Length: 573
Image (cartoon, rainbow, N blue to C red; front, side, top):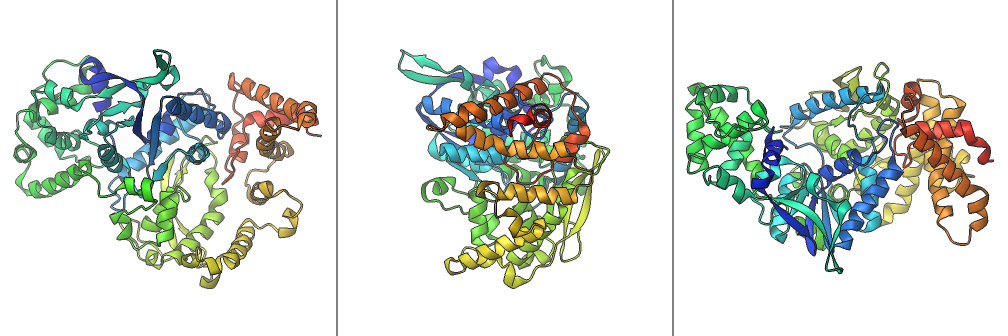
């Protein structure tokens, strides 16, 4: 969620609202979405060329190793798909437009912050590698994070201002003051991480000891991601909110200050809400009251018990159960084995195609993988027949149609895409996990995958198992790319696929001959050219647009790998 202006306001009063912590020997509940965005944007990664994933993985690993060194036990909670009510759709579209502008800025050499497409997947891979417990919630995770942290009586690590509103027993530690890179030691034996913890008591004390229960009303009046009622401007213009002490940020914090000072005069939310409604036309009061009360519920305890997932592996979400989705789908979503893309398609028949750095004058690169998504939509229809009825606020459409929010030039548009109708007996996902059908379903899945990618099985037979999927996807790309792929584009893809095996060879004992004669030299050359690219090499926009769309690739090629192919391909042979 997020309350406009609140985080900068509390940080402007850091000495009053925060206490210092030496964090060690504790559980901590981590907002996974906030963490991987912060690590991505504050680690000097290359954001223009499709994904500096190896460097990102190193940063994530170092972060958690710092926690382990201080005996801090992390539990990572990830957001899932869009809420079934679609109440946040307007905010999602606004942020999609903002991301397009930042991606365009990056593409022409300017500044901006856009996560590469597979950052979330790489983050999850590192969590699995390090055995960090994590769960992917069915929709937005904030309430679940708060409920779990209070159950365990431990702090929350995030950058979301909503955690200044939740009544957390042990407090909220903002990521920007969590000094995991500056781990300290007490008396030479015990490590700790310097951090700051937001004090809700100090915050309320600052505003005449206001009742904590008033803060959810403050959040919805101030405007968060779920509610933005234009009629609230009527209340704000008539109420003559008292500002109190002038903020150093000027008008930016006037609304925050005014609302908090005004609310502090009321004993409870009911009294305050009645006074808000007095400023509105009578015909609007009941409707506004219902909307405000519903939004305030977002700050109450969740019914989801994530502690059961971490202890027993069971994830029970009433909202998800009410939709009648297959149990194996819910389990796979909770374990992060399926992405939020799947739950959005299942629940809303709508997906968001995230913007990347590419040529904004060309059709977005997701267009090339549209036939793959059409197969996925067909599979999901077979998994959940109820999808044939539009749900939520999804656009009314044909029974086998899904809507996709995508970039068109520098704006967004909702396009209607037909699912491919698949024979039920060949794609019945409801029986996918049944043991007696597993071998048969595995064979059928392989056939369907190769048919989707339009690749013959014989082509892949001489390919090592670990490279079969990347090679098959590359074959699909060569057949479908609208922009003519050149030889060095293909060479760059092949070289990018070699990076993982090269690292394995370099770090494996007993392979010194391979290390000295080829693997180590090639890897060092790759790193050298990659470093040069970071120093300000102009982005080849057409190349970036051509090669970085690839779906499912674990190592996405960069401009650096293309340059390396041109300069040092002789090392491969």
